[in-house]
Image 1 (cartoon, rainbow over the protein chains, first blue to last red):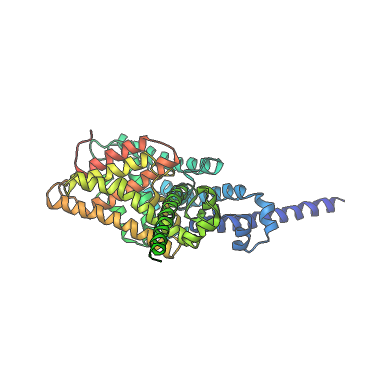
Image 2: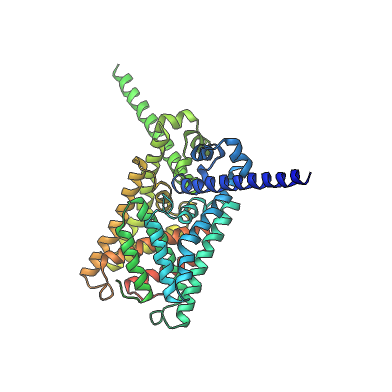
Length: 212
Length: 212
């Protein structure tokens, strides 16, 4: 009897682990797909096809298209943190150096096409910005976190007198964030790496750092 | 017989005029819809429903979804010219003053929601940037015209010594264009007019004009 319970628990754990792996695999595919075909393209059927899973499994894991969309946003947020935010936080002190690392990290993430259609959140914001609902709210929240991070580091830089004289940290953060988003769009649309170089120059101009 | 021919021609003209009006009405609706639901949402059925026309008429006018998408891009290009480009060209001489008028015109067009989901071309570029084909090509071409216009006026401003010292006109045009595109995304996503004010400040900083 005790053996049965132990074996039952082990089976449950294995099933759950398999479910988690399926879930991660599907969401990775979903996030990539969303940058090419939009969050609106993430139907149960399309995602089953793209991730080579039965429809019933996709449905069981996420329930609905909106369930898929919300879970995909979380997965993409994790990727963004891993690719852009955490490396900058780990490698630099607060202030201008960190702001520079965040911006360069973003440009590298766009240039390396971590997502095949460019930054997940720029694409998602452009797609769902005009459509009120939980998906837009979650995208706006994630975008707001990035905006707040740039702002916090710009403020830290100002406190340390690291910004050009008379620079307003809110304005610096705004200009960096919008310019980076616009760069992502141009980079994908024209499949152009020249814009990445120009953006790096712009970042340095805003921060008063010499271009390398 | 001659009367018959004349009458036939008049009927043909009336039919054509009616067709042109239907076409314009449908395309106006299509461009607005695309900024909320994407170019991908412009199916024959959806557009028939949104413009209160029979499916058969929509099909007869445009043939296919791609036909609708390409015609919608042309119509949006005309709106953009009427709303942003032509007023600036008419009111200002080449150079910095015109560049300022183009940027302010763009911001006003975003703020007034000429299209309910913000700038048609920022949305379209973000949506189809990663999907090669005639639709992406046409969007890239229209975006390129705007980029080239900003560049031409930045060069005219540089020739007239109207830019801040050491400013590279290509870099100025790039920074204005990307910042304006990013502003459009934030303005729609957060339904925020504060970003329009920040963008106007940024434009003036890049051009070396005092903020009003």
